[in-house]
Image (cartoon, rainbow, N blue to C red; front, side):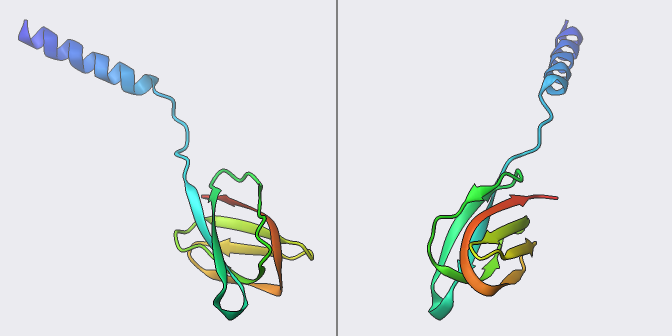
Length: 105
């Protein structure tokens, strides 16, 4: 009886685990936008490659992502800045950022 109960419990556990959806884990990428004279702001971007608006009017000269991720940002004057991993990327020329997206791969 004890063996039957253990076997049944294990079979039920395996069936439950295998029936669970295998979706990617969603997380946010924390991004720092740096302007002149030490001004900066932070914004979180979902790591699902969706384009998110940026509404802060600070003219940005560099962008960093201390937590990692692969992100692209688009400026009001046409710049495109790519940040890979935890590097800091220069925005040239400095400008207000209007949108961005991040992913994990």
